[in-house]
Amino acid sequence: MPIAGTGMLMTSMDIDAAHEREFNAWYDREHLAERVAIPGFLEARRYVAVDAAPKYLGLYSTATFDVLDSDAYRTALANQTAWSKANIGRFHNMLRSVARITASRGVGRGAALGLVRIRPSTDGAAALRASIVTLLDPGSLNGIISMHLMESDPRLSKPLTDDPAAPNPAARDWYILIDGTDAEAVATVMKGRFDDAVATTGSALISTGNYRLLWDLAKSDLA
Image 1 (cartoon, rainbow, N blue to C red):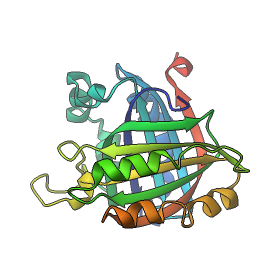
Image 2 (cartoon, helix red, strand yellow):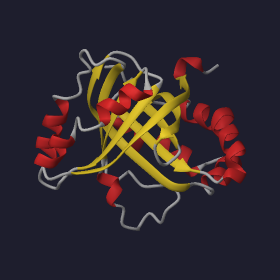
Image 3 (spheres, rainbow, N blue to C red):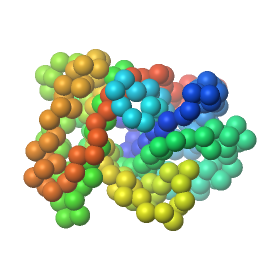
Image 4 (cartoon, helix red, strand yellow):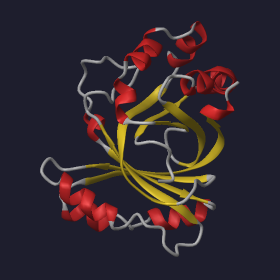
């Protein structure tokens, strides 16, 4: 499996221009390392939008899904640093998915990432999953390294910046991740590849987006 582990935390957000420099410094100097150090976390990757919204995206791989509902992770969330609290309080348009990687095909990771966001129908999830799985093998697709399906857990997928009791239809969304070497190749694969699978199961295609990798950090990189 090209993605390490079977759990995935995905966060994305916008930040106002006045605080963007500090936001990036916080992410690069504190936040990624802090999260990767949590027991069960394996690696983290940061992205910036090429043609997507929100502007910034983070992916955090965990050994299993249960790590994202563990005492260690909950303790980290409850004990944010002052720098973290200041930056998190400035997030706009935050999306947060606590998810399972249910299918993964290909080998390796690319510097270009495509993100397809889908809202499965209530009774069509199994059929949608089966259809998507048949489309994830990169095969001979030029510029595509690997593709993956992540399915959000509705109980745990809540933005840190919103009222936890507020309705959150995005909490049950699924995401297809397309790792590639070229943004144009990724955009070509995203365009229409999954439309039939979504339409025939009564699901909804919410958005697509194209991101480029800023940097990544593995557990083995930590001192």
